[in-house]
Image (cartoon, rainbow over all chains, first blue to last red):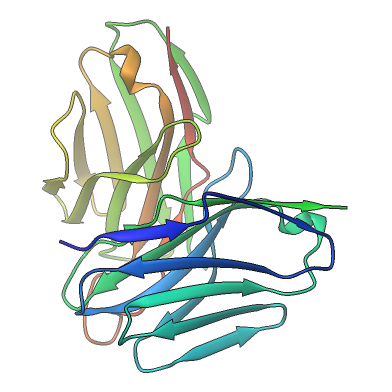
Length: 112
Length: 117
């Protein structure tokens, strides 16, 4: 089955700086890669996703890149703000699969 | 629009007691439904998923069971709770997989915090 690894497990940045979270996956058939943000005591919320036919997707301060050859994808947050502090999860799903396979999460802290 | 509900929001139960957590989805039909557990500071562990009424797949052997008595209702149960069952339980839904909906997003509920003492 699919195995998704996520790094780093914790990340602290100064407000205004950029943050990058990286994930790798093992199943070359995976073709959908969402990112979720989980605030304390709440369920994860989808913030951005990318499909395998696209190399990069951007939504305001958030961007995701995908390298299918290397089987890795990354979340980029620019101009970080304190409200970006949360746990971020990457995930992958392959054709015909019912399930998402999640990374272990990254706790991002933005220091004011 | 679609919404997903979970209750209760928090629950404290003694070891050996039964458990029933409920999840319902509104605004969609024939969804895939999922139960996840998140231990403190840990990632998301898929426990069960369902592609239809009374169709339940278990991902890990455990003390828990799941049922789907109605299309948009997913229940997580246990006959006797263990200390290790403590955690944050999340229900999620997604449109039933098809070529048209394959890339549809998976949405999570607000979660239930279970503490077993």
